[in-house]
Image (cartoon, rainbow, N blue to C red; front, side, top):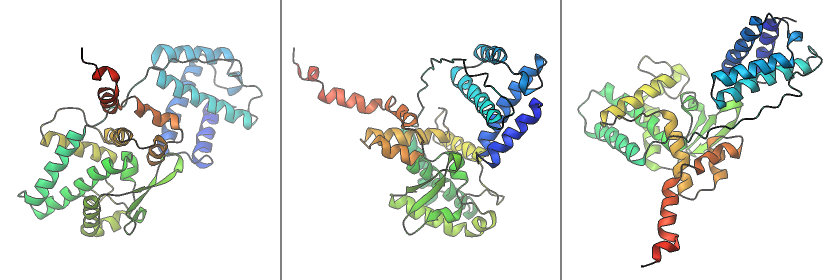
Length: 309
């Protein structure tokens, strides 16, 4: 069985039977094509010719080329492919069976947006919305931008999730949002701030025609779905407006959401559910960045600070 054909079959299996999202499929396709190219350089174009030695050579190449996190993902992609071929009886033995892979992964702490920056952006937006000299058209789209910033910080959603919200996902009466996350997993996030509720309702009224036409909650000036790239550009615009130069991304709002809740002693399992993490280990990374809380505890509770020498 040709490797190229089998890879295509596997990707279709992932998309239509496993129901993986398109971003995951895209990552798998990149990983699998890279693996195929590597094999074909060794004149291996048939899956039955993939040996343990070939796998070992590929892993060595990955270690020489990529960082640990990327290596782990690429190896996991190949393992999934091999497992699929075993289940389809395309191959009779697993070349990974006696290969052990060990990783010492560097800990990369998530970067968060400070409360000060969030407050400065929102202060600027609300001031402009209430008192700024602008056309009614510009004021409408400022309203949209306010709601987007508010929801990113208030709910911790991924930017892709935010841009994929449809009007039917909003429960106006209970003030909650249905979020469709990775792997078709769903969760519901409450909106518990009266000012955010008011602005969201106002936005939905003023943009009702555009929302109906596109089928999405957030829309562009050309009446199309508001994209992830547009959200990133919009955040950079307001960063510049308040005179900041730091790197600022939508995902930093998600990290901030989790970190600040943890600092307020919210149980990490509640945070896990609100973020849509499958595993608690993913959420636990925020324990490492909650340094403000740690500093306060040590300053107030450590007995050394009560010693007068």
